Length: 230
Length: 230
Image (tube, chains in turn cyan, purple):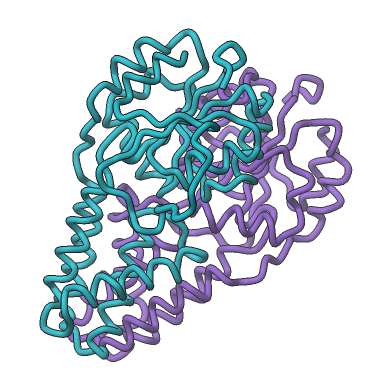
């Protein structure tokens, strides 16, 4: 990574700028307790995860698809015996998730203050469009960013499209985020830069099993450390 | 509208480039027949519409929010008596909608062929992000467009943001679409241009009651007629 060539810095949103995965974990636990008459907690978690991954190709990322998967999973686990009021409870889990406060992570504001004006800053995130826009609005961080890109996927081809759309070259783009799979690996593969800031909780689907050449990206423990490289 | 100043032409997608509303009408009819034990068809349509509008602020536009509203509506209309298998049927209505073929409207391809190279063409649409991207992909029209903007709303402020993001002035922007409310009115109000192409079916929520000064935008009956103004 050459700090002199970077023009656009993209921040992942969920679990990079603000708390997110924690809310999904809470929702999954609530879901498991709603269905505790039918299966063990462990089995319910496993089945929900399988259902989410199976539905990812049609629903994409975000809370609405998650709620639809929970409902489908509840019907299957219970062999259609789940009480109708539990379906309402599941809908309400989703509505509460969409209404959660935005808790900005430590150090985010000071980093954005330090970088604004020196780079074009954008948010690059997966999830539901309206939900992510609202969270950015609620966070009060909107003033730091040129715009938000809600992406249906974060694979190499998606980043290539984004970089073309920004009218820059790959080596002028730096991504900062908590997911090795979505915010780091695809960037390195297309010649862009990436900084990894692990969050204490990672969705199983975002976990990376392979060993990575650590020379090609930076891992830091606090977002303030990005300033050491810029 | 001054054809010499236009730089970017944005096309609405649903019911402008391809068939959409027809699929929603079919889904609503299917939903009504699933619940025919509990209410009249007319009442079911009315309640579903109310539910959709009530949930719009949290779910936004698109099929996933529509499915969640159908499920909530089914539970309420039936006083939680709706059989669990009907919930599965509703989930499947949604999955089938997300898997519908893309039927391109007459004249679209010849218009895009004529305009490409002369203007920056984009798609500006509401709806689910992944769904709209997939439809553009499936349509084969992707090669004509610089990119797709999936918007959470199509109000004046949303178009202002889009125009800023495109680095152009309002008078350099032309929107073409089937909804007076979403594709025409907000554009005129911010000094951009708009061409209205009515589709035979309009979602009740997109209907405009007020009289509009017809001098400020063009209404055409076939998309080919846009070429008369460009």
